[in-house]
Image (cartoon, rainbow, N blue to C red; front, side):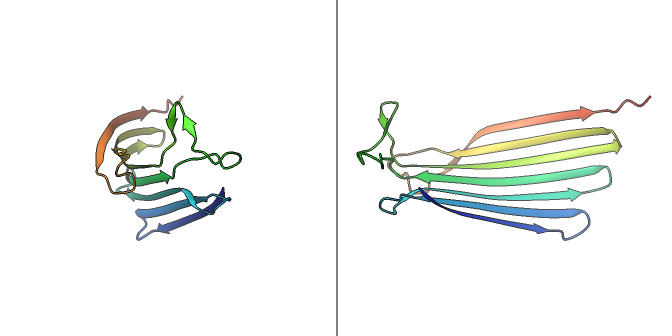
Amino acid sequence: ADIDLIQLAMAFRPSDRARVEGTFDYQDYWRRSDHTLVGRNMIPRVKFEYQITRAIFMRLVGEYDLSQHDDLRDETRTNLPLVIDGALAAAERSRSLHGDYLFSYQPTPGTVLFLGYGSRADGDPNPIDRFNWQPLRRSADYFFAKYSYLFRL
């Protein structure tokens, strides 16, 4: 396939304590034989970081992932549809939304506490409405904690 790739990035520092970063990745895949669109991926991502005090830091990250592809077929020999695990490789569209939050506390150098939360929501694939908007449903939540202490001799 012929691939179009676009990557955009932005960084903004409104103050010494705040940072905002954004990225956008975009890919198109085109068949060489008839120049039809085979697939498309789009991933916008935003990250916000804020240093509340010298010891306290927080970060928020949001990412939306959209991927779609057309019916797959054998381009090199027969031009017939591909069969994967006994089923036709039909067009599909998948979406997911990720959100993460991180809190960090570092009272002294070498001692740090991290607390985090993340969530993911996915779109249900529906073959009838595969190229129309479908609602996202929460599919995963996760928490984590990490404590690190540096022993000094």
